[in-house]
Length: 243
Image (cartoon, rainbow, N blue to C red; front, side, top):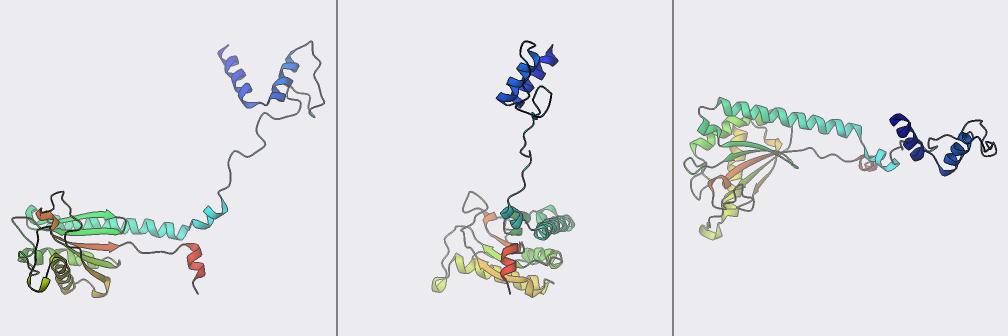
């Protein structure tokens, strides 16, 4: 009985009004079955209970044009390369002499690419206060990550950050100049320790505009970031437009 009930419900939902009338006429012995509306002898008068329109539709032509298999594969390759590099950085952290040293290194993914950050701590600063002179610790950290960065083929940008503590040196020297000078020193040392110079495409100072901590004066806001940029790729139409 339950099977018959579900079959009935399915037929009611799957058929048109004319088809349902044909079914009713077919099973009513007092009414002769009409053969006018279809070419068959069955209860549906030759009509199908299934829609004539296809269940699946082709993707819009513009969507197909936008999809670039080569670019998709390249993006997946980028992801794998970034993951491999992040794992190498983790191995480098483990190889450092102590956990205190390793805690200065962090990695994170951003829409722009992989970021490797060397982060200050109150007890172990990377630079002298108000100076771009690197500490021995900063040199040790840069020497540790330079060979790993050198294995990448990505363009890199080196970014200096400070905390929000007001600083004003002679001649209007501020946190903007200080963060840029620290980034420049980091670039010079990375190249000295083995990073190809032509991979660094930018050196930037951001002052205190991008803090890591909610506390604008926290030590971890003082840091050097190396951004390994995701390669830029044009879409199919843009590439076709190039000479």
